[in-house]
Image (cartoon, rainbow, N blue to C red; front, side):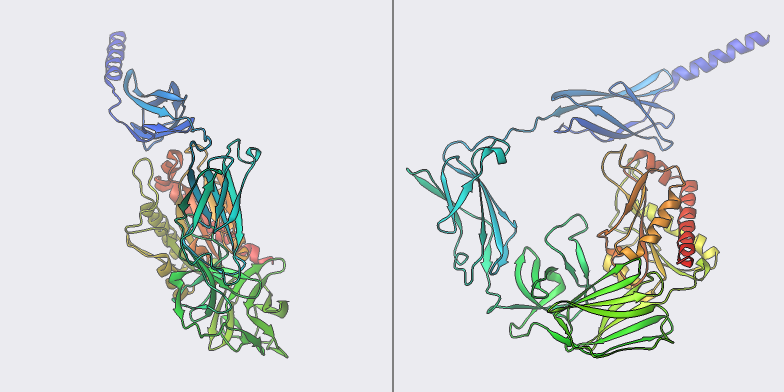
Length: 576
C-alpha cells in the first residue's frame, strides 16, 4: 500500500515538473542590430526560479527575476541563443547582432579638404595672446594655409597612426588682430590648382585693453569654473561666489565667459550667472584694511575690510585644519587683525600671505576639524562665518537628508523597471524615521515625488542650516558585472572623514567596494556650510545590486550602516 502511494506521488511530481514552462523571458537591454564591441552585455527578466543560459553559459537569476549575461561576438553576423529553463521546459530567444569592424582611416582621396577641427570647438571671443589650434584632414603632400597665409604643417605618419594628410597649426592672437573681422578659410594648393573651405566656427576679437566686456554676477548661486572641461555634472568648479561682483571678461567660448580675476589668474563663468554691464565700469581692485574676529552663539565671524566686492575662492586643508580664502584683486594694507579670544571657539589663529601682487591669501587656522563656513559680503566687508563644532552626540545633531531626483527627474532605471527616484525616497524616509526615533532633528529636501531643482535644494539647506547632510542616490552605468557596489563622495577635503566613515560601515554588508571619491563635481557636494556626503547606495543598473535595493530588509541594513558611520565620524572628532 505504501509502495503504491509513493509510486503515485512520484508520478504526480514528474508530471508537474514536465508541465512547468518558462512563461517569462524578456530581454531588456542588449537586443541591438549592430555593435562595435566584442564583449556584449544582456540584461533581462525571467521567472525567478528559472535558469538562464546565454550562448551556452549559465548566469545567475536573482529573486527579482532579473539577470545579466555576457556574450563574446565575432566580427560579422552573430546569433546569440538565450534560453530560460524551468524543469524540462524551455523558452528560447535568438538575438541576431552584427559586429562591425572599426573602419580603417585612410588618406583623403582626390584633391580635397575632408575635415576641419578648431580647438576650442565652439563659437568664441578671443583676445591678445589667446591660442587657437586647428587640425585639418586633406590631400597629402599639399600646401595648406589659413588666416590669409599662415601655413599648416603636415604631420609625419609616425605621429598620426600611419595616416597621411593630417595638418596642424597653432595661432597666437595678436594685438588689434584683423584676422577675425571676416570669414575664415582654409586653402589647399598643389601647385596646379587650389580650393578653399570656410571654417564654420565663429571667432570674434576683442582688445582687452580698450574693449572691456564687464559683467556682474547675479542670482543666489553664481560659480566659477577652472576651465572648459566638462562631464555629465558640468565643468570642474573653483567655488561659488556671490551676487554683485564685477568681473572683466576677456573672452568667451560657447556659453562660458573667460574672466580675468587677477594679473595671472583666469577663470570661466556661465553666461546665465552674469549680466553684461557698462564697459565704463572699473575692474574691481582693493587695498585690504583691518580685520576683526569675534565669536557669536553658533559661529566665529571674521570680517575683512575692502574697498570693493572682489571675487574669491575658498578651500580646505587638513592636518592642520585650515580654511583658505584667496581674494583676487586684493593687496594688503592691513595694519592690525583684532581678535577676541575669549569669544572664539573655532578660529585658532589668523594669518595672511600676499601670494601675488593682486592675490591676498587669508589663512584661518581652526581649533577643531571642519564643520563648515559661509563666505558673503556685508557692504564691502568680506565676512567668513566659521561654524562652531556642535556637541558630538548624534542625538544633538540636526541632520539633513536629500532623496535624489524626483518628479520628472526619474534618475536611472533598473532591469526590472525600478526607478531611482522611488528607491532614494524610500531610503530617505527610512533614514528619517530611524533618526527621529532617536529624537534627532531632521530636515529632508523632498517628502514626495516632486520636482526639486539642485538650486532649490541648496537654498533650502542654506535656510535650515543643518549640522550635516546625507544625499542618497543609486549609481548606474558600465558593465553589469563590474559596475556594482557602494561608494561615497565628497567635494571638500575637510568633509572627507564623514564620507570615509560611512563607506567603511557600508562595506560591512555583502557589497562590492566602488570607492571613496573626492573632488566630486556634484551640486549638493559644493556647499561649504556643513559637512556633506553623497551616498551612492548600489548600482541600480546591476541586476545583482538592484535585487538588494528592492529588498526592504537590505535597505534597512544599509540605513543602519549609514547611521553607524555618522556615529563613527563623531567619535573620530572627539579624538581630534
